[in-house]
Image: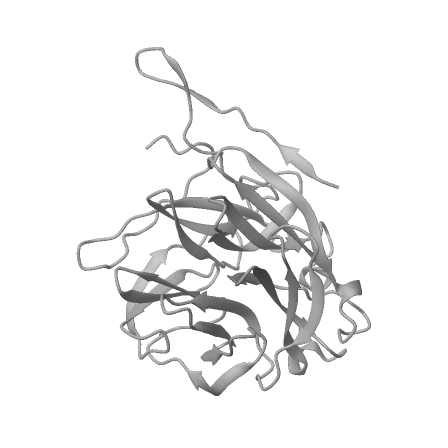
Length: 310
């Protein structure tokens, strides 16, 4: 079932003229709790976000499925419904749950959806990176197994370089890793490499490229709220040069994000606890503008609630 949320957002200018705002308010998904957003712009020109799903009152262990959201104007967002849940993963843990931060990639007419999920009751030692595929970015995903040869860690990010080489990034505390993927997008090509230069790395690695520079963004372990740091490199597998914090912590313990360019503007997608009073297991996805300096470094992001009028 599809649920479409249409937002008509208006602001009053200094001259008293009522005009439409340029974006949806934060959080931009309000009918359910969502976290860990992975944002992509596909060939149809729409922006798609693949988050994890928090279930009210049930905690991280009970996260059990994934929805997809999309927009073509940053104002109106469509919930395309659930695309995968733990019950559709035959190799997954019998108890279900633990469907944590996902990602999606596209190659030659196929969308590849990557998700972390344990295969046993002892989830910490049995994490795997599962793969589901579809010819649509929003439906019809079929589970295809998991990627062999990886350590038991979480939060996959699949980056497609300009030469059509795919890379898988993932990790855990102090363990950021990357590796090339074969053309089938389901097998690693070479040895897993630990990425150097990601100071304070905790989890949630995301890699993107701008003006020939590779960026790695990731949450650190700052208390009481994780902050988002970044590093820069001339090579997707590093070594990277740590640059510091560009997104401060919000009202929940965790942070997790992705950066994408859409219609000439760069955005970061992340989550906060604005709809739940800061409850760590009831998070909501947001987005804000990202700007860069002439040398490629990232300016501090201004987190907004409601409509950004700048």
